[in-house]
Length: 398
Image (tube, rainbow, N blue to C red; front, side, top):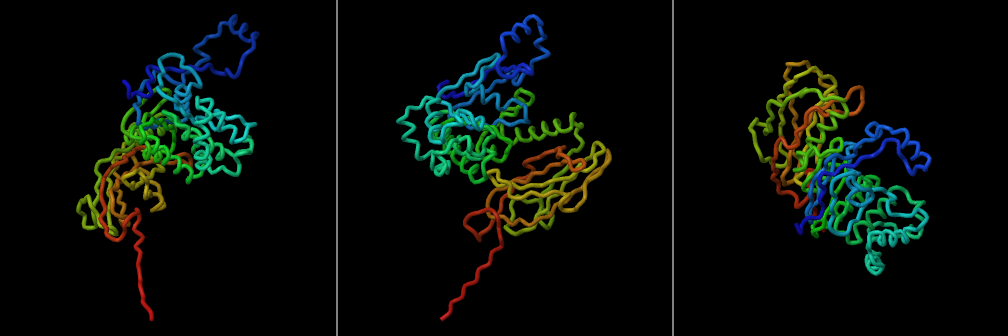
């Protein structure tokens, strides 16, 4: 029990539709006498949510907009209270939930650092000790004495994350707000959170950037309509996330429009292999059953490095200039040929089937993240991912 950092047990959060801000006494009296039906005016942002996190654990929370992700963070941060159930946290919390949370717009960046530290219970001497690190990490030296009401959203994110991560919280809560920062700062934040996790601190990370969730978290919780749809391995959570997003886009899910019958990864001789030489030709073949009439479909293949980074992605429509149209009962044969211009390491190959009607949002019909895992052998480079087929010429002249 001593290792437990967070526990939510059968937590529900109910909001009243149309209720904003504070009501007057007159409005409260009118509501009492009108005896409005509470069920018709309320909705549940969360329903019976339960999970536990131990110290040193980094968990990603994913799901479509409105699934309840930010509500969980607000409950854990103490920004709101649950309608029912138990919320327990153990230790000091650093939360980056909204860009302006914990900041006063009329105060400068410097003043807000001390304000936020005081809010989470830091002593001034402790903030003084961390102050230079916060400023250096944020990169806001030139603007630190400017009122933050003049900051851009990216500057807010820089200051907010820097303060949250450097004031020694035991639990770090991070919402999608990092997405407003540039990619260099985002990578910097992910690296900082990894260090935080490795120092036996706890992280809950909410993001639609699934690659960043893969890099940071060893576990993911998928939310759907305020409930926990899945809690476990990252890749299974992501697969189910794509299914949920497809359901959301289509209104109702087509009953397995496609089914993978056979998948093969071979060398140029047609032999199924698990190891390739750098620069060798590979062939990825798919045999797919079409269970319903589908138009404007395409098939993608992608390759990930062992840390989850996508090193290559392409699709049938990009390579052929055509979409797939099929009838129920037909079989589709697809072949991708590519050169393994990769450096030594472990890679995974995945694929998905999707469609986009009239250039609209892409809806995923089938998804397989780890169809094959293969390794690459090469001797021309010490580190990296891509094999750029470099050449070298040395000449000595007198």
